[in-house]
Length: 86
Image (cartoon, rainbow, N blue to C red; front, side):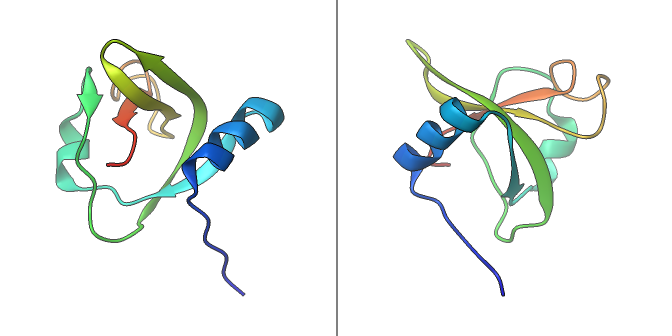
């Protein structure tokens, strides 16, 4: 059986209480070239897994903090800021 869950307030609470979570993401071609900053584009179909390690709420907006499996040479030392609700 498959399971899907995306109610964000509960996901934030789960992250804060349980720690890092493996999450499916719809990665688009733009993700290949991500180096730094905030990503706000996703693909149409779930096709990759990342580790959700945090969430930020600041003057720049609300973001998920994700760690990719590609190593420190990708993104911001292996991490990505993804705009929430993108």
